[in-house]
Length: 52
Image (cartoon, rainbow, N blue to C red):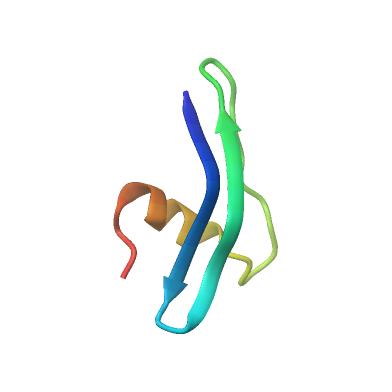
């Protein structure tokens, strides 16, 4: 299980993520959807420790 509560990420002065929460449960498929530029890649990079 993966639980994220109110994740925040900044690139300098730019706020990339603000208060993002999710709950991915065992045995279920979780998908992150959204249009271009809303922070999907930034969220995954923050969760894996690969943010710049």
